Image 1 (spheres, rainbow, N blue to C red):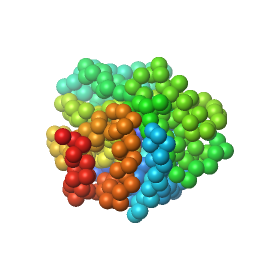
Image 2: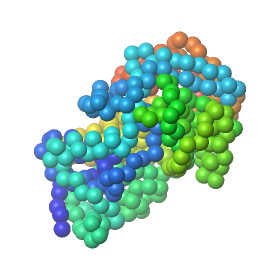
Image 3: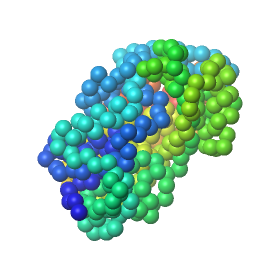
Image 4: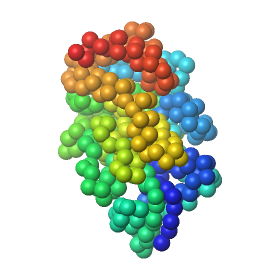
Length: 362
Protein backbone atom coordinates (compact mmCIF):
# COMPACT_ATOMS: atom_id res chain seq x y z
CA UNK A 1 0.00 0.00 0.00
CA UNK A 2 1.23 3.48 -0.94
CA UNK A 3 0.29 6.78 0.67
CA UNK A 4 0.52 10.28 -0.74
CA UNK A 5 -1.01 13.73 -0.31
CA UNK A 6 -2.11 13.97 -3.95
CA UNK A 7 -2.65 11.27 -6.55
CA UNK A 8 -2.64 12.58 -10.10
CA UNK A 9 -4.22 10.15 -12.55
CA UNK A 10 -3.01 10.77 -16.10
CA UNK A 11 0.43 11.94 -17.23
CA UNK A 12 -0.56 14.23 -20.10
CA UNK A 13 -0.25 18.03 -20.12
CA UNK A 14 -2.88 18.62 -17.40
CA UNK A 15 -1.66 15.95 -14.99
CA UNK A 16 2.07 16.56 -15.43
CA UNK A 17 1.67 20.31 -15.00
CA UNK A 18 -0.37 19.88 -11.82
CA UNK A 19 2.09 17.33 -10.41
CA UNK A 20 5.12 19.55 -11.10
CA UNK A 21 3.60 22.64 -9.47
CA UNK A 22 2.50 20.66 -6.42
CA UNK A 23 5.97 19.16 -5.99
CA UNK A 24 7.59 22.58 -6.39
CA UNK A 25 5.54 23.62 -3.39
CA UNK A 26 6.72 20.72 -1.25
CA UNK A 27 3.60 18.55 -1.62
CA UNK A 28 3.96 14.78 -1.94
CA UNK A 29 2.61 13.57 -5.29
CA UNK A 30 2.20 10.27 -7.09
CA UNK A 31 1.63 10.56 -10.84
CA UNK A 32 -0.08 7.47 -12.22
CA UNK A 33 0.12 7.12 -16.00
CA UNK A 34 -1.40 4.14 -17.77
CA UNK A 35 1.06 3.98 -20.68
CA UNK A 36 4.31 5.94 -20.70
CA UNK A 37 4.86 5.23 -24.40
CA UNK A 38 1.40 6.41 -25.52
CA UNK A 39 1.29 9.19 -28.12
CA UNK A 40 -2.08 10.86 -28.35
CA UNK A 41 -3.36 11.44 -31.91
CA UNK A 42 -3.05 15.21 -32.16
CA UNK A 43 -2.20 17.86 -34.73
CA UNK A 44 0.38 19.07 -32.23
CA UNK A 45 -0.35 22.76 -32.64
CA UNK A 46 -0.32 25.06 -29.62
CA UNK A 47 0.09 28.80 -29.32
CA UNK A 48 3.32 30.52 -28.35
CA UNK A 49 1.56 31.51 -25.10
CA UNK A 50 1.77 27.89 -23.93
CA UNK A 51 5.54 28.15 -23.72
CA UNK A 52 5.78 31.75 -22.56
CA UNK A 53 3.11 31.54 -19.86
CA UNK A 54 3.83 28.08 -18.50
CA UNK A 55 7.62 28.11 -18.63
CA UNK A 56 7.99 25.25 -21.13
CA UNK A 57 11.29 24.84 -22.96
CA UNK A 58 11.08 26.00 -26.56
CA UNK A 59 13.51 23.27 -27.56
CA UNK A 60 10.39 21.06 -27.81
CA UNK A 61 9.10 23.11 -30.74
CA UNK A 62 9.55 21.26 -34.03
CA UNK A 63 8.17 23.97 -36.29
CA UNK A 64 7.12 27.55 -35.68
CA UNK A 65 4.20 28.56 -37.90
CA UNK A 66 3.73 32.28 -38.53
CA UNK A 67 0.84 32.05 -41.01
CA UNK A 68 -2.41 30.12 -41.09
CA UNK A 69 -4.73 29.52 -44.02
CA UNK A 70 -8.49 29.14 -43.79
CA UNK A 71 -10.41 27.65 -46.72
CA UNK A 72 -14.13 28.19 -47.14
CA UNK A 73 -16.57 25.49 -48.32
CA UNK A 74 -16.52 27.07 -51.80
CA UNK A 75 -12.74 26.97 -51.90
CA UNK A 76 -11.87 30.59 -51.11
CA UNK A 77 -8.48 30.73 -49.43
CA UNK A 78 -7.42 33.33 -46.90
CA UNK A 79 -3.93 33.55 -45.42
CA UNK A 80 -3.60 35.26 -42.03
CA UNK A 81 -0.28 36.44 -40.64
CA UNK A 82 0.02 35.65 -36.92
CA UNK A 83 1.51 39.01 -36.06
CA UNK A 84 3.19 39.01 -32.65
CA UNK A 85 2.67 35.29 -32.11
CA UNK A 86 2.88 31.85 -33.64
CA UNK A 87 1.43 28.38 -33.68
CA UNK A 88 4.09 25.98 -32.47
CA UNK A 89 4.15 22.37 -33.63
CA UNK A 90 5.22 19.74 -31.11
CA UNK A 91 5.43 15.96 -31.15
CA UNK A 92 2.96 14.86 -28.50
CA UNK A 93 4.87 11.82 -27.29
CA UNK A 94 8.06 13.81 -26.74
CA UNK A 95 6.17 16.79 -25.31
CA UNK A 96 4.23 14.75 -22.75
CA UNK A 97 7.36 12.83 -21.77
CA UNK A 98 9.27 16.08 -21.19
CA UNK A 99 6.48 17.40 -18.95
CA UNK A 100 6.52 14.19 -16.91
CA UNK A 101 10.30 14.27 -16.62
CA UNK A 102 10.12 17.85 -15.38
CA UNK A 103 7.64 16.75 -12.71
CA UNK A 104 9.90 13.88 -11.65
CA UNK A 105 12.86 16.27 -11.37
CA UNK A 106 10.83 18.26 -8.85
CA UNK A 107 10.20 15.17 -6.72
CA UNK A 108 7.06 13.58 -8.18
CA UNK A 109 6.88 9.79 -7.97
CA UNK A 110 5.93 8.52 -11.43
CA UNK A 111 4.25 5.11 -11.68
CA UNK A 112 3.19 3.35 -14.86
CA UNK A 113 -0.06 1.65 -14.05
CA UNK A 114 -3.77 1.54 -14.73
CA UNK A 115 -6.29 3.23 -12.45
CA UNK A 116 -9.03 0.70 -11.66
CA UNK A 117 -11.45 2.17 -9.14
CA UNK A 118 -11.97 4.13 -5.97
CA UNK A 119 -12.48 1.71 -3.08
CA UNK A 120 -13.15 4.29 -0.37
CA UNK A 121 -14.15 7.91 -0.87
CA UNK A 122 -13.65 9.13 2.70
CA UNK A 123 -9.88 9.27 2.62
CA UNK A 124 -9.49 8.07 -0.92
CA UNK A 125 -8.27 4.52 -1.37
CA UNK A 126 -7.56 3.75 -5.01
CA UNK A 127 -6.99 0.39 -6.63
CA UNK A 128 -4.49 0.41 -9.48
CA UNK A 129 -2.99 -2.30 -11.65
CA UNK A 130 0.80 -1.92 -11.65
CA UNK A 131 3.35 -4.37 -13.04
CA UNK A 132 0.90 -7.25 -13.23
CA UNK A 133 -0.40 -6.83 -9.68
CA UNK A 134 -3.15 -4.86 -7.98
CA UNK A 135 -2.01 -2.27 -5.45
CA UNK A 136 -3.77 0.26 -3.25
CA UNK A 137 -2.92 3.96 -3.01
CA UNK A 138 -4.28 6.16 -0.22
CA UNK A 139 -4.48 9.86 -1.03
CA UNK A 140 -6.14 12.94 0.45
CA UNK A 141 -6.72 14.51 -2.99
CA UNK A 142 -7.11 13.15 -6.52
CA UNK A 143 -6.55 15.09 -9.72
CA UNK A 144 -8.39 13.28 -12.52
CA UNK A 145 -6.44 14.15 -15.66
CA UNK A 146 -7.08 10.82 -17.35
CA UNK A 147 -8.63 12.02 -20.58
CA UNK A 148 -11.92 11.83 -22.41
CA UNK A 149 -12.45 8.20 -21.33
CA UNK A 150 -11.77 9.05 -17.68
CA UNK A 151 -11.97 6.01 -15.43
CA UNK A 152 -12.10 8.33 -12.43
CA UNK A 153 -15.35 9.80 -13.77
CA UNK A 154 -16.74 6.30 -14.28
CA UNK A 155 -15.64 5.16 -10.82
CA UNK A 156 -17.55 8.07 -9.27
CA UNK A 157 -20.67 7.36 -11.33
CA UNK A 158 -20.33 10.52 -13.43
CA UNK A 159 -21.54 10.22 -17.00
CA UNK A 160 -18.92 10.38 -19.78
CA UNK A 161 -18.55 13.74 -21.47
CA UNK A 162 -20.20 14.17 -24.86
CA UNK A 163 -17.59 13.79 -27.56
CA UNK A 164 -16.97 13.83 -31.28
CA UNK A 165 -14.51 11.80 -33.29
CA UNK A 166 -11.35 12.74 -35.14
CA UNK A 167 -9.29 10.80 -37.63
CA UNK A 168 -5.74 11.73 -38.54
CA UNK A 169 -2.86 10.47 -40.61
CA UNK A 170 0.82 11.32 -40.68
CA UNK A 171 2.05 11.75 -44.27
CA UNK A 172 5.81 11.87 -44.74
CA UNK A 173 7.75 13.62 -47.44
CA UNK A 174 5.22 16.45 -47.85
CA UNK A 175 6.28 19.95 -46.89
CA UNK A 176 3.94 22.55 -45.39
CA UNK A 177 4.72 25.94 -43.90
CA UNK A 178 1.14 26.85 -42.98
CA UNK A 179 -1.46 25.48 -40.63
CA UNK A 180 -4.50 24.91 -42.84
CA UNK A 181 -8.12 24.89 -41.66
CA UNK A 182 -10.64 23.67 -44.25
CA UNK A 183 -14.37 24.16 -43.72
CA UNK A 184 -17.13 22.33 -45.55
CA UNK A 185 -19.88 19.82 -44.82
CA UNK A 186 -18.66 17.49 -47.58
CA UNK A 187 -15.64 16.53 -45.49
CA UNK A 188 -16.11 18.11 -42.03
CA UNK A 189 -19.76 18.73 -41.06
CA UNK A 190 -19.93 20.96 -37.94
CA UNK A 191 -16.14 20.82 -37.65
CA UNK A 192 -13.10 21.45 -39.87
CA UNK A 193 -10.40 19.44 -41.59
CA UNK A 194 -6.78 20.32 -41.10
CA UNK A 195 -3.26 20.05 -42.44
CA UNK A 196 -0.48 20.90 -39.99
CA UNK A 197 3.27 20.77 -40.56
CA UNK A 198 5.06 17.98 -38.72
CA UNK A 199 8.69 17.16 -38.05
CA UNK A 200 8.80 14.61 -40.87
CA UNK A 201 5.97 15.75 -43.15
CA UNK A 202 2.41 16.75 -42.35
CA UNK A 203 -0.47 15.75 -40.10
CA UNK A 204 -3.87 15.73 -41.79
CA UNK A 205 -7.27 14.93 -40.40
CA UNK A 206 -10.93 15.71 -39.96
CA UNK A 207 -13.71 15.33 -37.40
CA UNK A 208 -17.31 14.17 -37.16
CA UNK A 209 -20.00 13.40 -34.60
CA UNK A 210 -20.75 10.17 -36.45
CA UNK A 211 -17.90 7.66 -36.17
CA UNK A 212 -19.28 5.45 -38.95
CA UNK A 213 -18.93 8.33 -41.43
CA UNK A 214 -15.53 9.63 -40.46
CA UNK A 215 -13.40 7.49 -42.79
CA UNK A 216 -15.35 8.43 -45.96
CA UNK A 217 -15.24 12.09 -44.86
CA UNK A 218 -11.48 11.91 -44.52
CA UNK A 219 -11.16 10.27 -47.94
CA UNK A 220 -13.11 13.18 -49.43
CA UNK A 221 -10.91 15.71 -47.73
CA UNK A 222 -7.73 13.95 -48.80
CA UNK A 223 -8.97 13.96 -52.40
CA UNK A 224 -9.99 17.64 -52.15
CA UNK A 225 -6.58 18.61 -50.74
CA UNK A 226 -4.69 16.33 -53.13
CA UNK A 227 -3.02 14.19 -50.48
CA UNK A 228 -1.66 10.75 -51.25
CA UNK A 229 -2.39 8.21 -48.49
CA UNK A 230 0.67 7.22 -46.54
CA UNK A 231 0.07 4.95 -43.58
CA UNK A 232 -2.04 4.11 -40.58
CA UNK A 233 -4.97 6.32 -39.71
CA UNK A 234 -5.77 6.91 -36.06
CA UNK A 235 -9.20 7.58 -34.59
CA UNK A 236 -9.73 9.40 -31.32
CA UNK A 237 -12.58 10.79 -29.24
CA UNK A 238 -12.37 14.47 -28.34
CA UNK A 239 -14.59 15.91 -25.59
CA UNK A 240 -17.09 18.69 -26.13
CA UNK A 241 -16.98 21.46 -23.57
CA UNK A 242 -20.02 21.78 -21.35
CA UNK A 243 -18.55 23.47 -18.27
CA UNK A 244 -20.43 21.33 -15.77
CA UNK A 245 -17.65 19.35 -14.07
CA UNK A 246 -14.87 20.76 -11.91
CA UNK A 247 -14.72 18.90 -8.60
CA UNK A 248 -16.37 16.03 -6.77
CA UNK A 249 -15.44 16.11 -3.11
CA UNK A 250 -11.65 16.35 -3.13
CA UNK A 251 -11.40 15.03 -6.69
CA UNK A 252 -10.45 17.72 -9.21
CA UNK A 253 -11.06 17.18 -12.93
CA UNK A 254 -8.63 18.78 -15.37
CA UNK A 255 -8.13 18.72 -19.14
CA UNK A 256 -10.07 16.32 -21.35
CA UNK A 257 -11.67 14.57 -18.36
CA UNK A 258 -13.48 17.87 -17.70
CA UNK A 259 -14.08 18.58 -21.40
CA UNK A 260 -11.81 21.63 -21.34
CA UNK A 261 -11.32 21.92 -25.08
CA UNK A 262 -11.99 25.36 -26.58
CA UNK A 263 -15.12 25.33 -28.79
CA UNK A 264 -14.69 26.40 -32.43
CA UNK A 265 -10.89 26.07 -32.49
CA UNK A 266 -10.86 22.77 -30.55
CA UNK A 267 -7.54 23.66 -28.95
CA UNK A 268 -6.80 21.63 -25.85
CA UNK A 269 -3.12 21.62 -24.83
CA UNK A 270 -2.91 25.15 -23.43
CA UNK A 271 -6.21 24.90 -21.57
CA UNK A 272 -5.33 21.49 -20.13
CA UNK A 273 -2.08 22.86 -18.73
CA UNK A 274 -3.82 25.92 -17.28
CA UNK A 275 -6.37 23.58 -15.68
CA UNK A 276 -3.49 21.61 -14.16
CA UNK A 277 -2.02 24.84 -12.82
CA UNK A 278 -5.34 25.93 -11.29
CA UNK A 279 -5.92 22.47 -9.78
CA UNK A 280 -2.51 22.54 -8.13
CA UNK A 281 -3.03 26.05 -6.74
CA UNK A 282 -6.42 25.09 -5.27
CA UNK A 283 -4.91 22.07 -3.51
CA UNK A 284 -1.95 24.12 -2.27
CA UNK A 285 -4.50 26.51 -0.74
CA UNK A 286 -6.46 23.47 0.55
CA UNK A 287 -9.60 24.94 -0.98
CA UNK A 288 -10.63 22.77 -3.90
CA UNK A 289 -13.62 25.02 -4.57
CA UNK A 290 -11.15 27.71 -5.69
CA UNK A 291 -10.37 25.62 -8.77
CA UNK A 292 -13.76 26.31 -10.29
CA UNK A 293 -13.49 30.00 -9.38
CA UNK A 294 -10.08 30.33 -11.07
CA UNK A 295 -11.22 28.53 -14.21
CA UNK A 296 -14.43 30.51 -14.55
CA UNK A 297 -12.75 33.84 -13.90
CA UNK A 298 -10.17 33.24 -16.61
CA UNK A 299 -11.98 31.23 -19.26
CA UNK A 300 -15.75 30.89 -18.74
CA UNK A 301 -16.87 33.91 -20.77
CA UNK A 302 -14.65 33.13 -23.73
CA UNK A 303 -15.58 29.42 -23.77
CA UNK A 304 -19.26 30.35 -23.64
CA UNK A 305 -18.83 32.88 -26.46
CA UNK A 306 -16.88 30.45 -28.65
CA UNK A 307 -19.45 27.74 -28.06
CA UNK A 308 -22.21 30.04 -29.33
CA UNK A 309 -20.10 31.10 -32.32
CA UNK A 310 -19.34 27.45 -33.10
CA UNK A 311 -23.06 26.64 -33.09
CA UNK A 312 -23.69 29.48 -35.53
CA UNK A 313 -20.75 29.36 -37.93
CA UNK A 314 -20.33 25.58 -38.16
CA UNK A 315 -24.03 24.76 -38.57
CA UNK A 316 -23.88 24.82 -42.38
CA UNK A 317 -21.74 25.84 -45.35
CA UNK A 318 -23.41 29.24 -45.81
CA UNK A 319 -22.48 30.21 -42.25
CA UNK A 320 -18.94 28.86 -42.63
CA UNK A 321 -18.53 31.06 -45.72
CA UNK A 322 -19.46 34.05 -43.54
CA UNK A 323 -16.82 33.05 -40.98
CA UNK A 324 -14.05 33.05 -43.58
CA UNK A 325 -15.31 36.26 -45.20
CA UNK A 326 -15.36 38.07 -41.85
CA UNK A 327 -11.70 37.23 -41.29
CA UNK A 328 -10.72 39.28 -44.32
CA UNK A 329 -11.28 42.35 -42.15
CA UNK A 330 -8.14 43.58 -40.33
CA UNK A 331 -10.02 44.33 -37.10
CA UNK A 332 -11.41 40.78 -37.01
CA UNK A 333 -7.94 39.32 -37.52
CA UNK A 334 -6.54 41.55 -34.76
CA UNK A 335 -9.26 40.52 -32.29
CA UNK A 336 -8.82 36.85 -33.17
CA UNK A 337 -5.05 36.95 -32.72
CA UNK A 338 -5.40 38.64 -29.34
CA UNK A 339 -7.80 35.99 -28.12
CA UNK A 340 -6.57 32.82 -29.83
CA UNK A 341 -2.79 33.25 -30.11
CA UNK A 342 -1.78 35.72 -27.41
CA UNK A 343 -4.34 34.39 -24.90
CA UNK A 344 -5.22 37.89 -23.77
CA UNK A 345 -5.80 37.84 -20.00
CA UNK A 346 -7.78 41.06 -19.96
CA UNK A 347 -11.25 41.74 -21.26
CA UNK A 348 -10.39 43.98 -24.22
CA UNK A 349 -9.95 41.15 -26.70
CA UNK A 350 -13.17 39.54 -25.53
CA UNK A 351 -15.02 42.85 -25.77
CA UNK A 352 -13.77 43.33 -29.34
CA UNK A 353 -14.92 39.82 -30.25
CA UNK A 354 -18.37 40.41 -28.77
CA UNK A 355 -18.64 43.75 -30.59
CA UNK A 356 -17.73 42.14 -33.93
CA UNK A 357 -19.69 38.91 -33.60
CA UNK A 358 -22.54 40.00 -31.31
CA UNK A 359 -25.05 40.25 -34.15
CA UNK A 360 -24.64 36.54 -34.82
CA UNK A 361 -25.52 35.64 -31.22
CA UNK A 362 -28.95 37.20 -30.93
